[in-house]
Length: 228
Image (cartoon, rainbow, N blue to C red):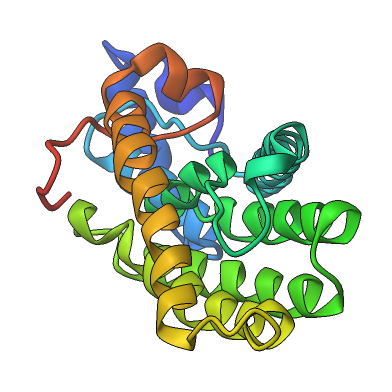
């Protein structure tokens, strides 16, 4: 067992922590956070993750997801005239690049889109298929987060194909508008938002240490188009 006597002849906190790491290896290896803490101590670093940090990480995940959902829904409903329909410029879709930075954006975007489409959407098709499209796009963005330039592609392609298809069934047939035109219209609006607003937002967050700290994001600045 590790006691204060083990540290009384050590000259620095690093040596003391290394001594502790040598005795605490079985305990530290039980969890991922414990292993990370153990490696930090062994390398002579101050451990930045407590052994009981799971609850803190879960709380931060929930808060981040709730904040993203609230911002997404608020922007969509405040700009409702341009957020729905065949020709749409949904400004809140700029947030779809956030999964490239944090996994909490995946449920956050899904819940935000679900709320938006429930309160002001185009019917049950928009609630079900629109929300699931956002969820799938967010998951793909997170999956390929190493490539920054890829972040706008999943929401643009999936929204253009899926949202454009059910909008054609709802409005295109009656107005004699072809399916490709509606899909291209939705994809063009999505691309404009994700590229003109989303990528600059991603760039700004990655270079703003105060903002990263405020939203609980542990990352390092990267150049656009580079791999972490």
